Image (tube, rainbow, N blue to C red; front, side, top):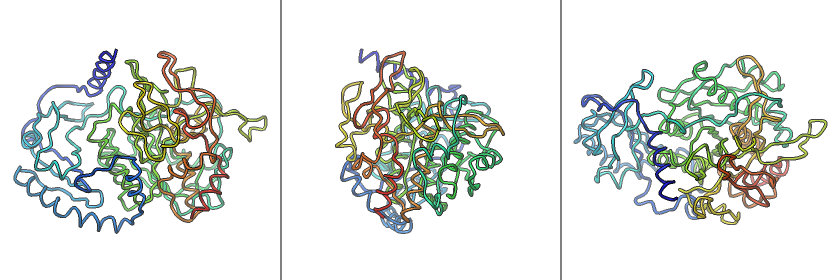
Length: 523
């Protein structure tokens, strides 16, 4: 059985990375690629361990971080630059704070340095390329470079990178009303805060945001669009992606209307998300909260891109930025075959707050929640969650009594950490193309929590930053969801909710007033 499962997963990974052709890249084609440099040599800390999180918890300003990086990385950058020059590579940019060095080189030189051939193919008129085999880091760079990004420009395929919004339909409540049900409100409504949204596709119409704010009786937030790489605000190409962007913006606006919203439009692949997150963390906009509602099962993330993203997430922890992400909308199996369950990345990273989904039942007056269970739509759609096979149990979950993975019984990072309403029943009423639609999914939960964190920051006068430790130390600040499961109807695989943390809804949904009282008192 184990061999069959592994072969099945391998075939899916190969299918996800299948290209539209098999021609080699012309040797004179010029490529751009980026090295992510190591911070210390060697790095011995296990991600999420007590020593790792304790070191990252030492806050640092952006100015001090850049000065630290200049001191540590000056010599490695010189060594990398000399090596690259000898190999015919041209230096394009150095980003000290982000630990990135970008070069351009002919395909033939790239293939020689990384010991692989590059294949090209046409993707709807866009020329893309990828390695034909495993990329080998030159031994001269192995101790200097964390990973290299840009040799593989394929978009996600099949079960790849996707948003986590449910198709519109059904009844619903305005995002501000759902925030009110949980008591997510402060006098300043997020004033002075900046919330970043990382969008890998789609776009939005400002008129939809204006209509939503009018309906919610909140002011139109200050908004800024940032193009990262070839990403840009492109509504009208993909309705599902556009709905995702509209949902993210309007939920944040409903929770924290006085906060500034910055939308980072990235290229639609894993390196694009890395670049977008890097710009948000190290760019001049300086957000206090970052919301990411895109992801995919861990098995599909190229190791290089995942490692590069974790490096940026570590910087976010040091800079006091809270990163909130979605757990997924395809139950524990994430629509994968092969008799296994999977968790989504980046929700499985130990440096983020992962968000699962619930289904709420309202009282007769529609002003209070009388029941809340795990979001599961008849075993077809519902909250993701489970146990990571890549990351070990982080220090903040050491006392959470996590179950072993359903795959092999081994312990690992538990996903999600928190939850909130995600079902379309009593879902989120937003405006799309001028009309009201009702949406749900964990893509609504992440901006709900992201907006709430901005309210907490505003109320306490300082950024909370990485707050997983504080929530796990005070689980009574959340309402544990003890009924339901994220079991897939076709496979029968998934996790059940119960007392305490669960691989469906984490610690549970927010008790807004209790969290506000407890966490703002820490300022």
